[in-house]
Length: 191
Image 1 (cartoon, rainbow, N blue to C red):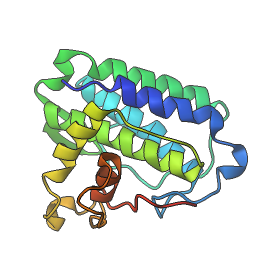
Image 2 (cartoon, rainbow, N blue to C red; image 1 turned 30 degrees about the horizontal axis):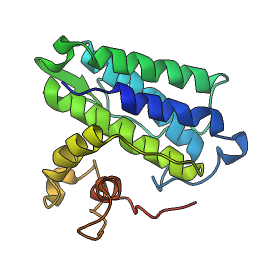
Image 3 (cartoon, rainbow, N blue to C red; image 1 turned 30 degrees about the vertical axis):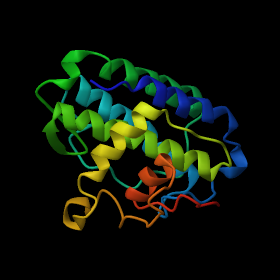
């Protein structure tokens, strides 16, 4: 079992500092504006919460589409609440047992939990970078995700549709920079 709470709390702490004027701005996810990234995060929270609860349905049976660029009123407290619910769902040992479905894909729940944690952690970094905020994942999360993402680092076929080509960084790069690079992001990206 891996703890989501420290990561979801870090992401939630960013939300009050996402100014409205930045919502149409660029993100490290080239195809998303900040608003689209937020909408993607709202949806992935629902999908991975449903996965943790062993549910099947509209939130997790289909792959994610292109997120809308319009945010509903109250999106900040809504995303904060969904992040909290996501962390609670994956805090139950039963969430990590059997199989789980998210994004139209079924994996062993132990793998799906790591996929979900990686989604939140990396998109939190995307949001922080796009809005000029500091963001540091804790050491345990970084260690877990570096091992998880690094498994397929040299297998582009396995990464297809999940990550872009790994970005080159120095061997002694900071662990968070290495994680972002493994997911195809330039650790030095700025808007």
